Image: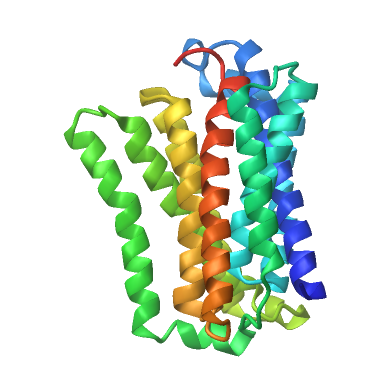
Length: 298
């Protein structure tokens, strides 16, 4: 594994660890705060922002974007997105030590699968291409870029529409899919934003366009998750979201940026095997970790 790829793995692991620990702290704090529907917006904001625990969680979930963007500047999307499993491993350990949850059999199996998948996926290296700024801008003029954006947009809109048509039955499934697609859209533009990053980026209007689209993708995902939690079950939504958010960005990296173009079939096979093991661990850890940090409303 090259130095750049090692930095990408470490930064992505740190970013996702911060994200999930921040979410855990936010949920723990929110469970002890007055119900949102009992107060006006101003009072709710005051309640949340005056809670030290919630503030720490809020800070972590926002600051994590910095190391994640840095990771995307060092490594391919197909390597960065699977490192979400490391964040879930850290969350599971955090839940055991801080939230005093016991390690269930499923947690143990999930930990083994997730770590094994990460090791297998990362151990197989190749000469993945890393686009520069000019290449990133050139992608904007390519039909496959717009087809991909349209597909991701439909991946967000269609599940929402289906959920509404069904009277929000199984909203946790549909909004898990939609939020995963929205986050994937945010990661795509984060990759473009950080391609060949240098100080000159701040003088380009395209950089700020990409930044806005990143915020819209990530912010939309957060809003969709909250709606899905209200209408459905977190224990269903979160594993679906995490699986989509691992698989879709990795597929985008391969299809749009040709990240595996120079790898042998054997190396690709090992990476796909590691991805499959990792996804199994992610689903198990997502389900068990949500039980640990989500108020019992399911």
